[in-house]
Length: 130
Image: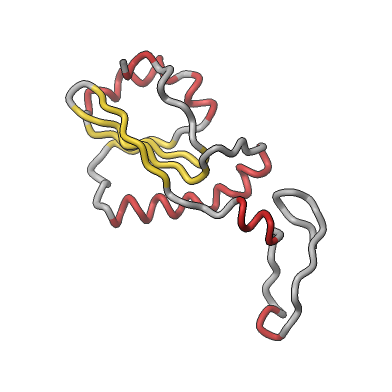
């Protein structure tokens, strides 16, 4: 098999229970890219932004991001479980961060905001939060 994340060949143990299922990623990538919900709070005027992300300190390529985006469902389920659906929820990626100073001013007034992303982005440089 060829790993979808690192493009390296890997072997799988073939037995009856795995006969009709195929692993897409190698054991090494399975350990490296194991999704874990991370959490940060950014205080804003009269409220807070809760920032959830799955991968910390990993710079993902476009293809890795596209493959790993299937794990975003973990955050959706977490938000439902924690009853955070009454917050304003925004998915963040690099393209959205480039324009955050244009649109971010409009959501600050909501007070209770959830940002979520696949990988961690540094929000400390954004002027609207200062």
